[in-house]
Image: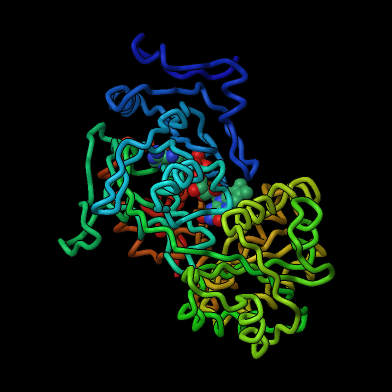
Length: 462
Ligand SMILES: Cc1cc2nc3c(=O)[nH]c(=O)nc-3n(C[C@H](O)[C@H](O)[C@H](O)COP(=O)(O)OP(=O)(O)OC[C@H]3O[C@@H](n4cnc5c(N)ncnc54)[C@H](O)[C@@H]3O)c2cc1C
């Protein structure tokens, strides 16, 4: 018989669905990592959540917060069983403050829905990950997600002013202020952001928002195979002065999938740049031909095509993952980043990794920020996947980069945590984890795994 865990008090049990359909919905994330949850809990308010955490702690019952379930490394997969705390129904925009430019939201609100609600007010929320039509603001905060516009506006962490969270102790904290800046000592807020639901469950977020630019235009340009992407990335940093707000690159395979699957007018047989530029409304000059001239010194000779609906461009580009799911199937989807001066070395190294193992490779990048998404066509939980990931991280670290620039570590990349941060630093961070989640019930089996071992022995590390 399936494990159902200890019996809940009646007031909490009524919030739990243990039926096969509910369990099937929440037993995995988009990486395919899977667990065997005992039930899906839908708390109706924060009080339910506090009661649940207080009950679960002493009993050692895992609680896995879940938003849209779009994570790519097992972040939201309940790999140690327990109860999945489904917050997707907490989806309200609670308050808009136009004077101070912030909004208060529930964590289950879908990123794109917030954009729709803000648009009529001339506002927008800048971080827009490829999954913005299905990922939640709570999930974005818990993974410190980035988006196409992070080139200009930075990651989620730069846009969260304040958060309420229920810690693993059952206490509720409200951290942060309504100011854009704060220098009042060591701060818990940035640690909660990116903690993948392992330090606390976010129940409310106050997010900065920005005035919508007067006009934004998408631009599409072919990139020849011979071009140095590193040189392009470095050269385009200076184009921020011209209002450049997003710099995406896709290889020839992804370009052809986007052309075929969602009708983006991309060149066939070559990779492409997808740009977004913010221009004042009064500019009448032909924007694409000005950019065509500007891109030539970077080795991009072809015609630059406009795509007037910039949000439409990012919705279309956001379909790349689903198109590749259909065409390539299960694969390792990584998100390393390196300094731009090391970009070409990263590309060469990644192609070499795939070549040496005879594995298919598809590439796309948030090029402006130095993030590469290598997609290796192997099942993500296979042994070759594990080897590829390890080699890839070491390549990124050797170039001064990171193993994860946006998705997080989850269960599939847990091993990278200690090596990325160093032993002394992770030991100190582990004290924080133990203080905020003393029973170890919040999303177990994820990146803290290695530090459990490191506590007893020395653990790996740089
Ligand atoms: C097609 C596609 C494109 C993507 N593009 C991008 C991209 O451009 N940039 C990027 O950064 N990522 C991207 N991702 C990865 C993923 O969408 C992000 O990590 C996203 O932020 C996850 O949000 P979610 O609501 O789906 O969270 P979930 O998958 O439900 O959860 C993710 C993590 O957050 C925790 N969590 C969720 N809600 C809460 C809460 N209320 N409190 C505490 N913890 C919580 C979970 O426990 C889990 O650890 C993409 C994924 C897909 C499938």
